Length: 82
Image (cartoon, rainbow, N blue to C red):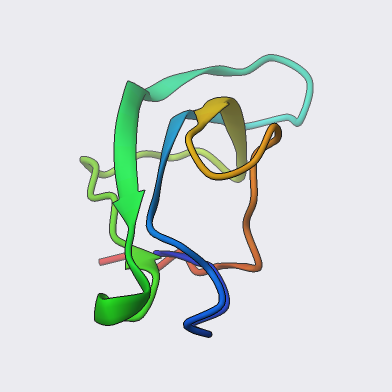
């Protein structure tokens, strides 16, 4: 789950990002390919990305676009194993 501050001062934005994973924090491979995710203050400014089980110990987000700011933005990252 990706989160931005829920304040209404933040306008709705779409951020383009991919999720990479690694078992050794050296070599990363794509876990979730690049896609656009909409963060909307009206719905809590949260985005959930679901992916198949993986043995990756490390995750890295790579931001390549943001319609609300010239850089990637994230205030909290939560990862849950099932």
